[in-house]
Amino acid sequence: MNEPLIPVQKHSNPAPDSGLTSSTGEQEVLLEINNLSKNFGGLQAISDVSLSLRAGIVTTLVGPNGAGKTTLFNMITGHIQPSEGDVRWQGESLIGKSPWKVARGGIARTFQDLRLFTHMTVEENILTMMEPGAWLWQLGGKSGKARRYDKVDRILERTGLTDKRHTRALDLAYAERKFLSLARIMATDSRLWLLDEPASGLDPNSYNLFLQLLREEVKDGITVCIIEHNLDIVVNISDRIAFLDQGKLLADDEPETILNDPTLAAIYFGER
Ligand SMILES: Nc1ncnc2c1ncn2[C@@H]1O[C@H](COP(=O)(O)OP(=O)(O)OP(=O)(O)O)[C@@H](O)[C@H]1O
Image (spheres, rainbow, N blue to C red):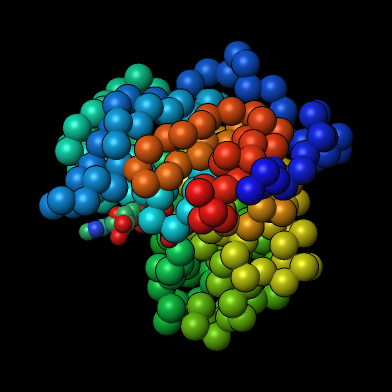
């Protein structure tokens, strides 16, 4: 096979009005992965991976099934401890930290299986993410409550869920549930979002809303790392792409370089 993953013109991504940054040169490194490895018994799921996530951009993790993308997320968030290597968040090692400590430090995550509180309403799902220790709760009294609800209003508006405020999560349509999982991390005030296939299965309207939401959040200073299989989405959102295969980081570069590479395309489509 001698075809690219998807033909991309240089400087064609992101679109001029996308609101996403395209330069990755000088941004601060927020999260640094150093020589990370993970084996499950005899299976080497991640092998000596080093990767930096830079502030204010969208980095996409791409690779065939079983490449190790979710395992990498799991090691960042403390759900799995690495066999070797280090993960540093704003300079501080995350090794040995529990998921709730990593989350409280400013790293939020969505899961493929969403993990919503299905019997709670949309509003309740969002409020549970504003933990009692957060400053909005500490304000107490009327002003604290009013500001919490102002924030919920803003999140509902951005995620298109205003009319579903009092609907239980289990009664939502599929796309609405996906937006609720995003709404929940918006409530955390985290600086880094790790999104595991956030747009998979979305209809065209929902897909456009998702892109718009992401653009607004990145413009407001959120740093994003996404696992994504849909190459159309990858082209539309990525400032940087890291390509994994069989636990190894094969490439970490600008989208046009990765997406035009026929060798990576052959690996991605299982034609090596
Ligand atoms: N807890 C675990 N125990 C044993 N093996 C695991 C575990 N988690 C992941 N693996 C294996 O590690 C490898 C990498 O899996 P991972 O889920 O990280 O890949 P992925 O790139 O996210 O795949 P996909 O795109 O299909 O979601 C796979 O072979 C998987 O079966």
